Length: 193
Image (cartoon, rainbow, N blue to C red; front, side, top):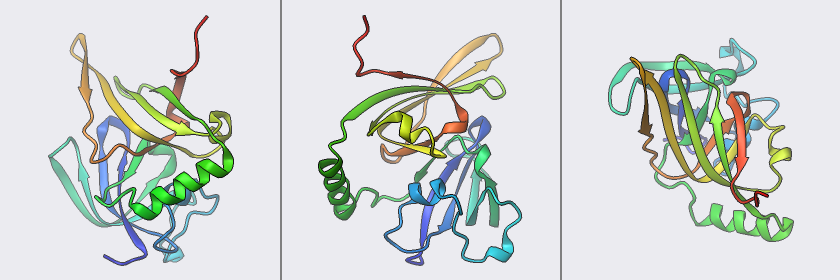
């Protein structure tokens, strides 16, 4: 793997998951920053069809947890169609990243908050996502994606005449959720009167 590439999993509607490599400007550049950037980095800009897309290489499209549907050498995924994504690597949250995060928390005095997110319904399916974030949610709501740690995801689907819940398996507990797909939020750390 090239040091300026990162393995990423992107989930779009109906639980489709694209897993492949994305180009990053440098090996320490975070994927969250890449997808929240006003100008998304492309190693080869002449391949760009959409201004609002991420370029992936060596991609596999999964239709559920294990069933691979198709392979692509290259593909562009529109940011507006991404419901959530995560770095699909085991080394996520390495010592340097944890040190950077704890330093930022100390410097900014940001509190950790727990949020419950309900996504918009797409074709009889939506996600119920719970996770923790640092800082002001209002500030993060201006970004494309909101980073969550200790994330739990449940997909709610309508099958025949019943609603069915399915826990989504994540390789680790860090994800980024698209602001475009959030329908409602509830802050679990707030006191209800």
